[in-house]
Amino acid sequence: MYKIDLNKKAWQWATLIFLSFIWGSSFILMKKGLRSYSHDQVAAFRIFISFLAFLPFGIKHRKKVNKENIYSLLVVGIIGSTIPAFLFTKAQTNIDSGLAGVLNSITPLFTLIIGLIFYKSKAKLISAIGILLGLIGALGLISYSSGNNIIGSFKYYGLFIVAATICYGINVNQVKYKIKGLSGMELTSLAFMFVGPFTGMYLLFTDFSFALSTNDYILNLGYIAILAIVGTVMALVIFNTLIQYTSALFGASVTYLIPIFAIMWGLFDGEKLTIIQFLWIGLILTGVYLVNKQKKK
Image (cartoon, rainbow, N blue to C red; front, side, top):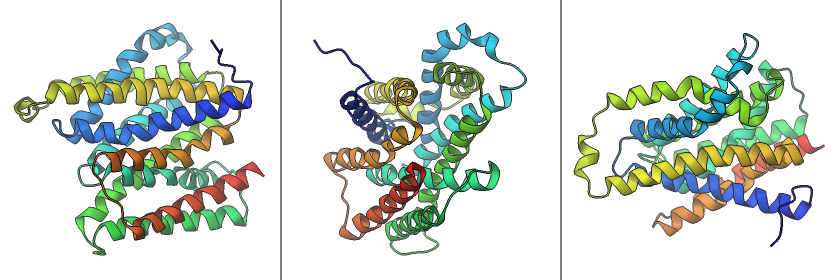
């Protein structure tokens, strides 16, 4: 039996591809959950189940919460996890899981923009070009999916995902520039200690009558549980471990692969993509590539 050794390049790439598969599969799991549960119930279940999984670690490291890091923990828990969870499920009430995965790939673009404006990071011309191409591709994809209707309601569902990527951009910069002395596991588990109980209370007061009227509500709840345990808890642990052995840039390259798996699952589930949509997707990925290429330099 081979032992996983993340000091070796082959294992690093294998781990990256596996992580991409996990996160790329999360969009289809959200879609499955939405067949019985409302978008807010799917998001709340995802955060609450993740909180329960992280609870032993949060209790263990609770003494590491202090006045210097509590603001950052709130940012990671609320802006980095909870708000995007609700935005993505809301968007997927009208957007295919494959397209949701593609739009998610503009996260590095907003990470760079937010870093430049609020965290005094540096960038050169090629990064600005990448940002422009990515945003044009995202807006083009949303507009085309709206039937070219600029004020169409579908467009606004696509903008929910754009808003979620902005949240991710804030989260990444906060973790990179403001948090010191906490490991990835400590940071994530403590952040979920703040948001998990509120999503649990929210679920207590929601109406499950529609969910109970569907035939597969237990099965679809299982999909949500997989989404939480695998797509949130396991994925965060793998990602943070990978970063310890490689670099933030290498970990960020997961962005390139997530849309591929998201589209693959979407096509497998009967979704369709047109040639025009593939062109917009290519423009998004080109922009993301240019931004990350500049970071590498």
